[in-house]
Amino acid sequence: MSRHSAEDEQELLRLYAAALDRFGQLVVAAGAGQWAAATPCTDWTVRDVVNHLTVEQLWVPAMLAGSTVAEVGDRFDGDVLGDDPAAAWSDAAEAARRAFAEPGALERTVHLSYGDRGAYGYCREMTVDAVVHAWDLAVGLGEDSAMAPDAAEFVLAEITPYADRLPESGVFAPAVPVPVGADAQTRLLGMMGRDPADPLGRGAGGGR
Image 1: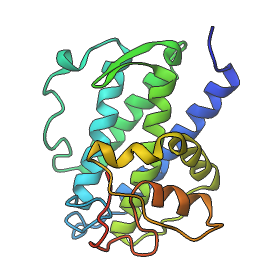
Image 2: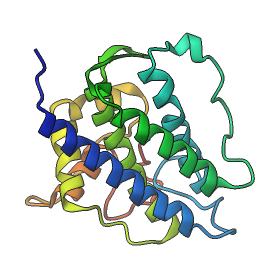
Image 3: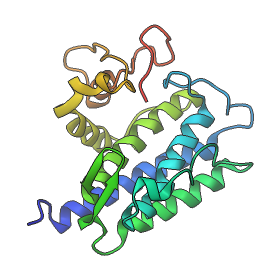
Image 4: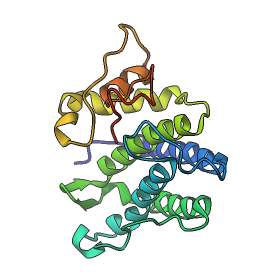
C-alpha cells in the first residue's frame, strides 16, 4: 500500500517545481563574468553548481523509465552546459518536471547508484538538492539567498533524521553550530555543513 496520498504527491510536485523555478531564475540572472565565481560548495564555481544540478535533472527521465546507472553510463558526464547554460538548464529541468508529473510516475521504483528507491522518495531527494543548491547559487551570485519558508521547512524535515550521518559521506562538511532558536533555513544549512554567517568562508568548508 502506498504510504502517501494523491494530495501528498501534488504538494511534492509543487515544491519540486518551485525549487526548479527558483534555481532557473538564478541561472538566468548570472552575468557573463560570474560563472567562475566561488560558491559555498568547496571547489565548485557558479558554473559547477549549475552543471551539477542540470546533470541531476538530465538523469530523471531515464531513471523514471526504469534505466539503471550502468545503462545510462557516461551519457551525462562532464560539462553539459555548452555555450548556453540557461537553455541547457531550462531544457533539462522541463524534461525532469514532465517526467515526475506523468500519471503514476511517483509510484515507480528507480534504480539509483546506492540502490533501489521509490520515485516519490527520489523526487523528495531532488527537491532538497534543488532548494539547497539554489541557496549556493544565490550566494555565489550575490543575489537574495532567502529560501521560501515552505521549502526550508521541507528540507529541514527531510534531512533531520539523518543529519548526523551526512559528514560520513565525504561530501558534506561537519555540521556548523547555529544560534538556539534559529529559523529553518539557518538550521538546515548548519546541518549540511554550510555556515550561514560566513557562507564563502574557507575555514569550515562547504558541503555539496
